[in-house]
Image (cartoon, rainbow, N blue to C red; front, side, top):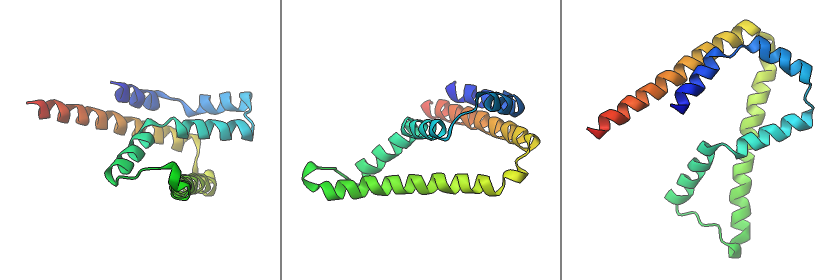
Amino acid sequence: CMVISLGLYIFLSNPAKDIQKFRRKGNSYLQDYVTAVLLTLSNPMAVFVFLAIFTTYSVVLQTSHLLDAFLIIGGIYLGGSTWWFGLTGAAYLFKHKLTINTIWWANKIIGISVILFAMGLFIYLQAAKI
């Protein structure tokens, strides 16, 4: 139900109004950075993926092996940073093609995709109960 609501929110969002609101508000680079970091850290999917990987491969971070712990945490940070720099770099390269109309259509397609995925997962899980 929450994922369907998210899909509807994405589908119904209006990028023109969002851009106007953003321009009036005027965030600083520090505010944007802090928001991105908090959003990344609070992403439950990422937390569960790392828990699953650590559990599957029996990765245990012990205080007696601090170098190993720092290497693992550093690798995760480096991977996340590479991903974010890649995304922002791609957005910068294609910013001239990102018109309001393109973003509007992307919202419609992504919103419908999220809704269909949620409905398909719900149907699959209901059928698995039988």
